[in-house]
Image (cartoon, rainbow, N blue to C red; front, side, top):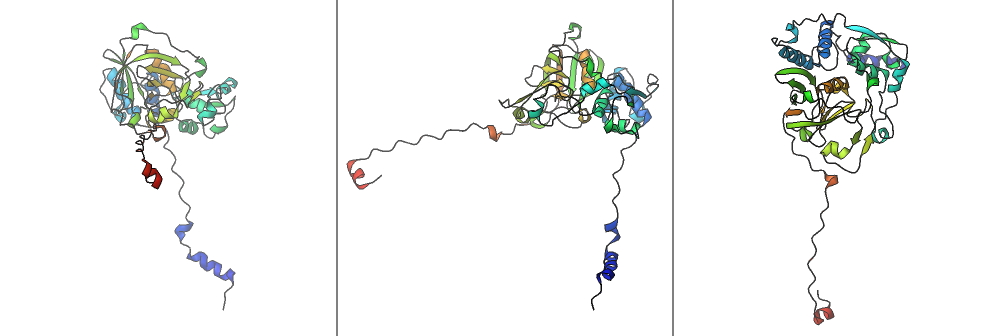
Amino acid sequence: MKLPFILILPLLLACVSASALTIPDPLPKPPEPIDDILRLQIFLDTQLFGPGKLDGRPGEFTSKALKRYQHSHGLPETELADCTLDLSSVPEIYTTYTIREEDLKFVGDLPSQPSAQSKKKYLPYDSLLEFLTERFHSAPELLEFINQPMKMGALKPGDVVKVPTVQPFVIEELTEVPKLPEVPEFLNRVIKIDTKEKVLDVWDGEKLLASLPITPGSGHLATPPGTWRILGITQLPTFRWDKSVLEYGVRSRDFYELPIGPNNPVGVMWIGLNRPGIGIHGTNSPQSIGRSSSHGCMRTANWDVVRLVKLLTKGMTVIIEGPAPEPRPVEIARAIPVAPAPLPPEPKRGFFSRLFGRK
């Protein structure tokens, strides 16, 4: 006897394991910012001992910035948990910012491909949230958390947002300057870069003036170790995007000239060295500083590099320590074809050879 399907269905459902019907747990939320850590990060950032993006969480670059600040002031170096710095200069960790109509001039359409970017006059922020994260040196997760339930993806002029109390990165004050003025009294200063530590330090004699996190190159495009010097500093640079240079370090004729803007690949500042194609510069990806690799240069956040250049001048020494670039891979597409060897001349043929068709 055949049972009706309506009677079989409950039996089938009963056979389905409970685990198959279990709804997966949601992804864990990121940890909440810790006020004491954020206060320390704001303090260190203000002193130009950069902790990287402000997020209120203990991390590698906050720890490195703390120890370097302590060293520069003759204090015992400690871990974050044992920090006893006087942070009274940061009485409040938050303030507010009202989004202005003129802020929209720096936000707009941002193509992803260099070919399309090269056709624009400016590479802007792609959202007001990105504008705010760079202006206030912050991780987007921090701004989203402290501004709940505001929708940070739908910001508009007139909105009042909560932000950290840092010195804002005021992009509207930047103008195109091919070469910043020289400052002779800075000539004896030295930049020391440790590509393993991913840190850039500025020294004036025995005094450590500033320390910033960077992203250096790696592999066959590792930042070249050695002693170099600054050839010049350009504010709001353009960028020659050449895939061959980025992948192999070999200049080609196939490139795009990308315009200025905060989302230019080298950011808002270029500090050129006397090593062709190598420099210290800003970035279009501040959230990745210290957590990825570059194509040989040393990049840091735009909010850091605009303050860094105020300590530098043309002719300063730059000492880079770290592993040398690995052997460069062969670029098959650019290999020069080799002409085949010429064939030996045919032997002369006599009358009988021609007659009987012998070769």
